[in-house]
Length: 435
Length: 96
Image (cartoon, rainbow over all chains, first blue to last red; front, side, top):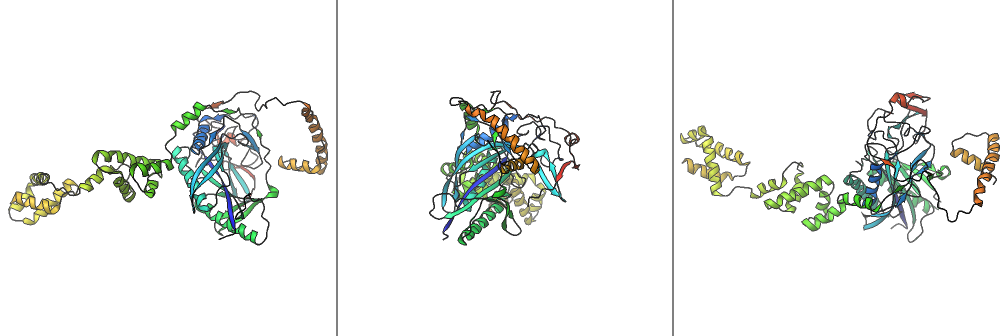
């Protein structure tokens, strides 16, 4: 075992799927649109333009916060985070720093050594920046994304292995989708991960005196690879007696290594101050209650309920609570099953193994399979009568001595019942009736 | 309060202002004077006074999530010093 252990925290940004932007009412649906067609003086950062808070976004941020067990602050404020970059036209991002909307939550994750509680420091509301593309020595700017609502969720440095980090990120993505606040598509940039990584000697209580920030990594797989590389790199550096410093690093997928993006010397000094153009937010207890009550059952709660209520295995419960749609499909099938005498576990197995389309009546399908072969003689007789009366030509041939046509009559009985009849029995009955 | 050249250079950098040596000297004097002037506030007893963050004093002023018509691309790019294919152009920024 290594003498060092990693200390890790995660920052997750998620773009909310509101119709309009955070501080102006330009359409926030920018993906694939012509550049600079969703802008106005506010999101172009023109002097004198005044921001206006999007109520729906605030609600989305609170939904996320409450689902993570955060407290919604009685009073929260927007602040200006000042820095210069071409994607940020007004020279500051409206964000939250000292008075975030949601504070102190937690999430349970599963890592290499079982379950662990990760403390959430905050879930705050901010705005996205414009999109840059670097082509032929110049930089092109599209401000369609500028001002799209963004929620940032920051953990305490509580992760101790990469499995926990992966589980946390996956659970957050699942949560955003359950809550319906974001599509959380990593490739489209709806959801972005940043990890703060440092290592310390095993047994040391205090946090390491530096941390490396891994940025701009757009898949779970790359993030895990980057973190693993970084832990190894840092341990090796410490073992060589090197001193590690604060820096920002990116991931080079081709070389499978992290690389330096920005060192401490260039670290930013954001000079946050309260945004004077926006009023503070005061969230009442009744508003919090309303959001709490409108929230769907969370995936991890659903998973345990599926186990206790329906007797499902943990892995099946996990699969069936993966998405809200899947869970709803399963539970409505269970409801149908009750009337037909088909149990939840049979339904769970059928859905997981057969992967039916959600339009399929699962309980009925299973019922049919269960009954399998129609064994009732009376029922078979009735089916045989029908087949005989519907196929006079075949019956005539048979009677004339062409006994092989019995196969065609059996086939007709099969088609009629969707394959439920026992071919042998129905043949016997047909022969008896025709004989 | 005396601002030294290094502090002025840092502030200038944060404000994205290219200052000449001469301007740094001049700014040091002027900024120091401004700080002295503002520093008079330190003499006021504010022990029992709540900070004010917004002079209007309102809260929860929000609008519903209904998109409105944006500027056209031409209007948005009207004041751009350089543009191409509907994009603003700025001098190259290399992130990697």
